[in-house]
Length: 422
Ligand code: ADP
Ligand code: ASP
Ligand code: MG
Image (cartoon, rainbow, N blue to C red):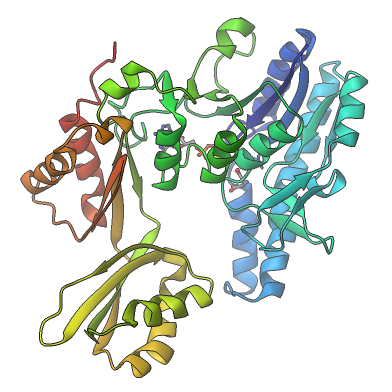
């Protein structure tokens, strides 16, 4: 019988009752003859609670030693939930064993708090599966070459699950969460959002990278690279629903672009409140400016997203870009102390009250005027666009954060996403 990986998110693991429910569901799959590997997240709120404790003791710091301890700390959340699930399964009469990432091991690089998986040793898991056990593997974590525990970035259990599915050559990876699939936009922001039966892998990649946290972007990258069948579905359906029905529910991340997908010009809207805008004003407009500014930022390990350089006036120009909000203060300090004096720029200003709203759809490849329809809608709502960026299947704008919900709702309507799809 085939090997299946299930992943359960924080809300799905949020209480002992919910863990019992997960155990009953997994037991159902196991009894139906599937070899089962389960990847749980920490119980909801636990990762935030742990990281909050660290902050109480010392404000966040970029030092390696501090980041290392954050991973040591945050990884315990998944260790606890994995053990609890194993206990719940044993109580259901199902043989089960849990492993922390380092015990397999799941090898990662040493980038604490955002490590990348390099390899997964499958021997122990395969031996247990052969004995008929359900194997539970902590999400979100691994171990580096110096035996330090690492974590994969927030939402990283999705990536653990897909990487484990790849390593074990699983026939499918099912991501169980607190919504019943991938929607046209976050259903918590737009109640009219519709669930998609399928979404193309490319669209899911754009949605995730533009801020839809229903799947961590690295998990989608892995699934795309190794063509792992991936499905997002609800953990809140009754555990005893028919297994075949359950296996077909939710949203399939599809690798084939069918005609129906092409018909929808825009498939979804993503938004992201985690960015901040930095503007360097009055920069002398000469070769090497972008490199001088962004080179220094890259060297400090700060990721840059959108970039805009204005045309120059009187030999001076303005240069703006966005970074993660957590990096806002660090970027400003860096520019003020190092780059501005060298460049002779007039000033640098930051804005944390921005958000990025993106429309995503593979139909945008073959249709013109989609971006202008987006801009028209925003102008009708009186929303000023600060930055724009486009790719083949996406248009993103940066706007004032206070208009985010208004913008998402209006765009959702403009592109008919609240209509039922045939
Ligand atoms: P988990 O704890 O199961 O990993 P997350 O909170 O990480 O769950 O992701 C699920 C949440 O993603 C949903 O509760 C929903 O609010 C949010 N979300 C954002 N965009 C979408 C979307 N397009 N479709 C479905 N859910 C979305
Ligand atoms: N527990 C981790 C987090 O809260 C990982 C995850 O939930 O996927 O980010
Ligand atoms: Mg998640």
